Length: 101
Image (cartoon, rainbow, N blue to C red):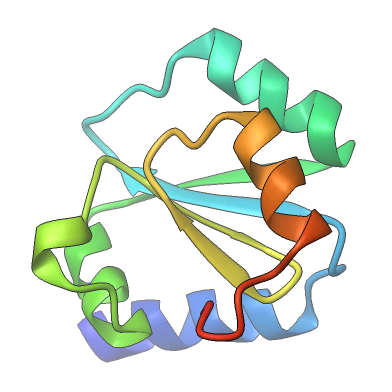
């Protein structure tokens, strides 16, 4: 079952529009509405996906346990962990580190 859920999420991520941010969060968690609005303003398009096992996705992506936070976002093939401010995301895309995933 976990493999099927991961496969569905992965296929969705592969065929998603690059400018659309996908936010994966635990089903029991609530993201701050202000942060979600900030992400919508940044990208124009956001999909929020509630999952029973976000940790499994984080493990599959390769996010180290010590860096894991409440949610995981994917934008333009890059992974952002937690409620990263839009200003930090903008700065990231201005000068993408070579070791970034």
